[in-house]
Image 1 (tube, helix red, strand yellow):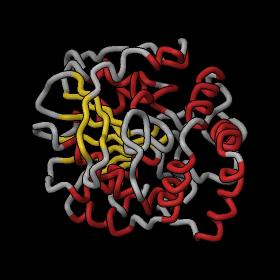
Image 2: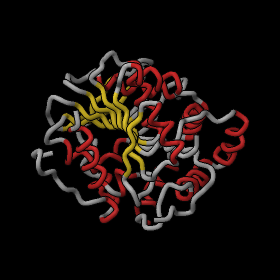
Image 3: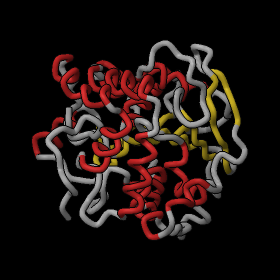
Image 4: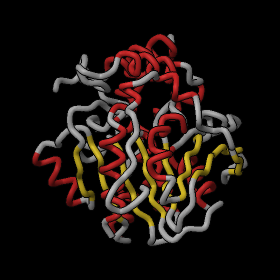
Amino acid sequence: MRRKNASSKGFLRRSSGPDGESQTPRLRPIAEGRVENLEKGIMLNTLKTISADGLEISYTQYGKGNDLILFVHGWSCDQRYWKNQIEFFKTKYQVVTLDLGGHGKSGTDRKNWTIPSFGDDVISVAKQFNYRSLFLVGHSLGAMVILDAASKLDSERIRLFLVDMLTKKYRPVPDEIFRDFIKPFRRNFKTHTKEWVRTDNNFVEDSNPELIEWISTDMSNAPPEIAIPSLYDLRTRNFDQTIAQLKKRSISMTLINSKESKKKDKLELMQLGFRIEIIPEVGHFIMMEKPEAFNQKLFELIKVK
């Protein structure tokens, strides 16, 4: 399966830098249906909490259970991107989706749009619940956010699942390189973001064109005054100490990727403490393009003690 319009610049993606135990529910993949359904059935009972800096954070809770799964979206996305996970998991777990600050229905009055501030958003939501174990699932930028959040949570009963962010050790981008990269975003954020999302190695040849259009249009409507500094902090931040601290605490960290890492990169990731799982023949938005495969994989990983 070939990537669609692969680009050498992967600043968004990782390559740069149930009912019963025996039978699990099935969902119709968004890629086989109308993507307009993303707008339905989520955020009907939105709740609010306050992050560390006073910003209002929107979140939604589903289901019941002793364990909590908290889904964290990526750059310029929101909690709708996890719609196909809710029905699958809510029969056995508490399930929570949230809008990070500046996204979806959360507040926008924040001075610094950084990974640590987003991590605080996750913590503020997690603290609203009682749970036996906490499973943090983060996609793309959200993957790095859950690393930050876990590093600040005083609990060893946390497990992390990083979705399609790291195929090799994360290395910050020098300022001068990022400044060149971000220029077209500053000139025309909406137009350039839509084209970038469509062509920056985020989809495969067989990706649903309707889904591609929905995602690229939705992300291009993000406020640039939030999106650009968020992307800057993501791509220039060093996460070495955070990852090392989590490894030292024996916090489980699993990568769920759409493609294999090179051998040397895989070994380096494993040395950093990551377990690596692959869902092949799918683009960057695994949970949207192949929700059944993603849900089953995540469910199996969660069940492993």
